[in-house]
Image: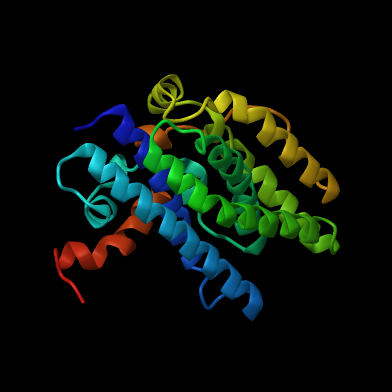
Length: 250
């Protein structure tokens, strides 16, 4: 049953799943071993959150689809993640800027979801908040390290901030599912989270000696299934085995 509750859980689960997949691409390619392992651990944290959220979404839908079916047998038009998380890694600075923007929103959103009238969603938020708090500290510290480091690192992270900025507006722009969730008490009003997100981002960018981009036109569409070309390529790789051998188990 394609209800707003189901769509809302898909948004949350798809964000975590797609970003987990992106971070997993760094495994074995990190700049140093410690950071390689750290990113892999963050990817696993997000994958665990995605599993819980998609399992719950399948239960709410009531059509017998579990986490694997929702992850592997939906097309890109059926994914509900924000466009930010599907952007390619490009380089370390780009990855950290993308992570920081998402982590800041994720932290405040999960704090709000502790009060969700959906008991299972509130429990997922409570379980995940410690992980998300660490994620935000990790990405914030890297923003400062790159911004206040060498001239080259500052140029790279500023470029990443500027290029990713148009994708950040969708984080706090309510979809129909978001509006339903806020009204029903299952979720939270994203417009209330927006000033918290802006304040934290501004503080970290200032400490990192980076310029806050000017407000302007923002990309959107991910929450309604309109994605960039990058998601299709990523899903083709992620879903290949299950689609080739459906139902196969180790």
